[in-house]
Each structure stands twice: as C-alpha cells, then as structure tokens.
Length: 229
Image 1: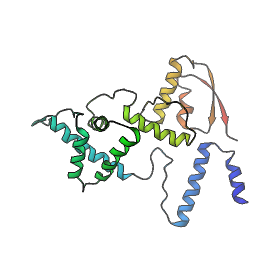
Image 2 (image 1 turned 180 degrees about the vertical axis):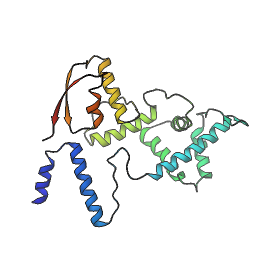
Image 3 (image 1 turned 135 degrees about the vertical axis):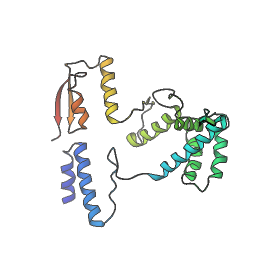
Image 4 (image 1 turned 90 degrees about the horizontal axis):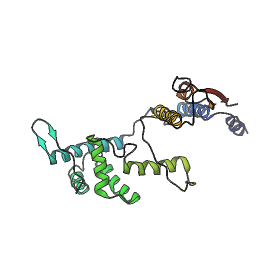
C-alpha cells in the first residue's frame, strides 16, 4: 500500500521533480546495496561510454591514413579523403588493426548501419571519415545525410516507442539544449509567431534557460507560470 501511495504522490510532480525523486531513490539504493550509481539523466553523466569512444579515436587514425593516401607533404599536409572504394579500404585497415581498442566496434558498426538503413557503403564511410577530418562544412548544413537517418531512428525509438508517426522529421543538429531553445525562439520570432509583448505559458519547474530567455530583450515576452501542484 505504501508503494501505491508513493506513486500517487508522483502524479502531482513535474517531470523535473520526478527526475530528482528518482535520483534520490537510486542514490539510497546504491548506498544500501553498495552498487554503482550511474546517472544518465544529466547533460554530463557521471560515467563514460568507452566502446564508442575507442571506435571514434581509431576511426580518426584511419581518416588520417586516407588523407595521407591522397597527399602526404613533408610539411605535415594531407589531402581530402576520397569516397571511391573507401569502405573496402576500411575493411582491410581494420583487419590489420584487429588488436586495437575500437576495431571490433567499427567492424560491426559499418555493416549494421548499411544493412539497417540501406546505405551505400562508400558514401556512409566517407561521410564518417570526412566528418572526423573536419575538412569541409557540413552539407546539408542542418545535419549530415546518413547521421540524420540514424538519429531519426533513435528519436523514434526513444520518444515514440511503437506508435511512430506516419511522416518523417527534418532534423537540425545544434550545440546543445540551450542552443536549441535559442534557435526555437528566434525561429518563432522571425516567422512572426511570437512578438515582443506576447504572452506565453510555461510549465514549471522547467529547465532554467526557458525561464531566463523569455525576459531577454530579444524575446521580451510576458510569461504565465503554470506550476506543478
């Protein structure tokens, strides 16, 4: 009965307050059971996913080999990696680096993405390599083509579950949550959907920048706070 009453209490909390309560419960359980408390509900979690990072840094080494394959100048200058045949060259390079951390991850990742999304192997690997080299502006600038497909699928899984919408979202990669809010308010203002002096409602408690940005000169909005009971 106590558990039912506790769950009833959660019904009156905002998502931010529920998150804080769950963290308290997790910390208490961690202390009681002497187990690690992993907090994934923050912008900066208290743990590091090592496997993808090992793959990332190893991919950077392959990218440098691709750059030097095109041009290798004594002054430390390389060329721009070329797409033709790059997936096959990655396969061969990973065979030679099989004992390196991240090699198994990269070797499994590429065919998984190609099979799952129907990517062209060379185009996908070239996008990864070109991105990690950082020798071009992103095209399209809102988000890279293959990355968008992958992130879109993740968002559908994380936010929609089994009830996915019929259409597709056009994604725009930004620097972080606060940057996304800035772009959102700027877009609403540029399209004259929100004008200075307009009144909006904000559910609170909420992420602090939402509360602060509305009072800036660029927005100058009147805010009605809808507080969680």
